[in-house]
Image 1 (cartoon, helix red, strand yellow):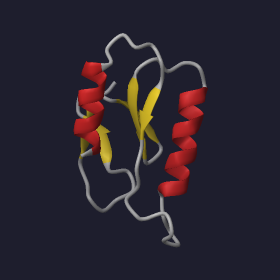
Image 2 (cartoon, one colour):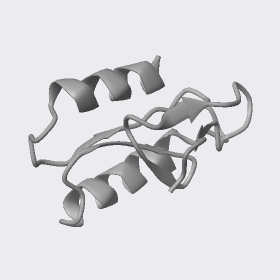
Image 3 (tube, rainbow, N blue to C red):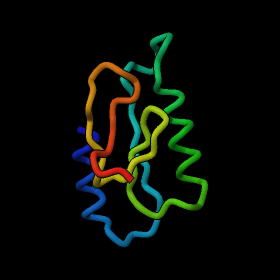
Length: 86
């Protein structure tokens, strides 16, 4: 899953120093009310802002550390949270 992939990458690439942003969507890109476009745009903005230097998950308007993201819903657009946020 996305959360496990992000956690594994954060451990494998510790100290890499470049932004790695993982994203996805609850609905396929071609669906009329998809969240895919917004998640992709948000992830590109986060990756190019210059302040991120680690693995992160960008989903549902949130940017979470890759090693702390947890999927909490399979149906709502804000499907990931961080139990230990911030």
